[in-house]
Amino acid sequence: MNTPELESDACYLALKAHDARFDGSFFTAVTSTGIYCRPVCRVKTPRRENCRFFRHAAQAEAAGFRPCLRCRPELAPRAASWTTQDASRILALQAARLIDEPDAWPDAAEGEAPGAARIAQRLGVSDRHLRRIFEANFGVSPLQYLQTRRLLAAKQLIADTRLPMAQVALASGFASVRRFNAAFMDHYGLNPSALRRAGEGQAAAGKGQAVEVRIGFRPPYDHAAMIGFFGRRALRGVELPMADASAYARTLRVLHGGAAHTGWLRVQIDEPRQQALLEVSESLAGVLPIVISRVRAMLDLDAEPMAINAALHASFPQGDGIRVPGTVDGFELAVRAVLGQQITVAAARTLGSRLVEALGEPVDTPVPGLDRLFPSPEALAKADPDLLGRLGIVRQRQAALQALAREACEGRLRLHPGADVPATLAALQALPGIGDWTAQYIAMRALRWPDAFPSGDVALQKALGVSGARAAAQASQAWQPWRSYAVLRAWHTPPAAPTQPDDAPVPAAVIS
Image (cartoon, rainbow, N blue to C red; front, side, top):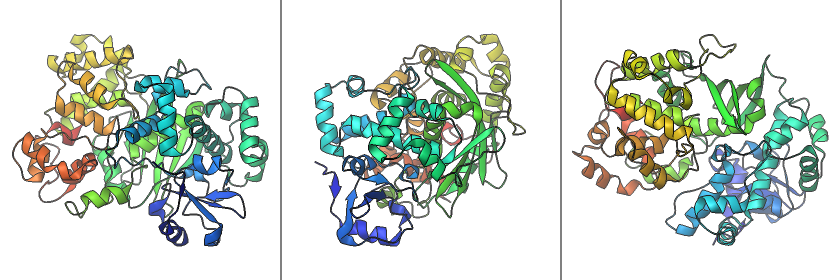
């Protein structure tokens, strides 16, 4: 059982060192001030006897502490270690992920948040059982955890944007401004408008039609490898990586509350501050917490390098900063995985770009070269097979793509972090043209499952020095539950896994 408060001298040592590797892994509450901080906070280190250490922000707030206005706990990367075999803890972690991920509830009305009963139903357990194991593992109830998430999301929007308070309340999951104001006052003892006035010098005015926010991550982070990965696969009109691998921009569609929100985003890594600087079009401001969550997943900003490297460093000593590239759209990732089967990087990029040009909706952006949205499931499901054939997509791939699109349209296939991984893997493999490799690859990147392992990938087998899927799977056992990271490190490890030229045949895992 996890106690809410951590009793660890190691936490105090990390606090004294302002060690960014522990950012989001614990929070320090100071009894003399009533405030809790991140380990990276630059205020004077409090005396040890005045410190209480909590694993989650919700635990600190449940104990009566308020978030620091300087280090801003809402910017910290999330912490949810999967290094456990305990079934009840895994269930509690899955429940927390469903609370963390707005995309888990695309049909929710604006301002509506999932209750414990609905989360329990999704997980197939009773409401009472969920509450019991959640409190045992997190030290707070699901409702307290959710309330903290909503309040910290609102706090970030207040501090970093000029959004009206009514829009902040709805975007953060509150049903009304009245409830939002009451919750904010009750937890923080401060009116939201007063908080904005206090930080007006810091709030971003935006650049034209955009809002800006910051997102923290734990070092080390190989951002050049991440941006380079996206750059080699960029689709015309949808994505635009910077030539020096310092930034990345793309278009985006968010379906939430029965409405489609479209626009663009641009993200740049600020390595010295361990932050991602995110610029989002004003048209997406109403779903900004969802966009932030998707960018966290796309750039793998919530990874826990210390736990991952403890399992993988001996086998891949050069890969400590490599993360698993995600996606801002699970359906898009699945389509691209199918398109990329058995062809080169260049060929997959060409097919994807043709599909965007033929079926993608136009969208206005201030970024030259970004002018299309990736095709929606509805557009692909209704596409004429003859049109897809003229784009160069063979019939077998057409059948897989359109079956995938129909399942997404009907809501039977949920491709986002928080989805039920075993059920989703089974649903994917029941579709024509999708086997174990493709399903594992989608789980790795779209579902953010850290232990996915496409053992049938030929490039992976070569990198591991084995022959066959069974031998690759056997070799991977020591890397559980971080095998997704082992896959990326194997692909990046020279000379055993050399980078393939664009015109050389490579397995789908390397190109999708």
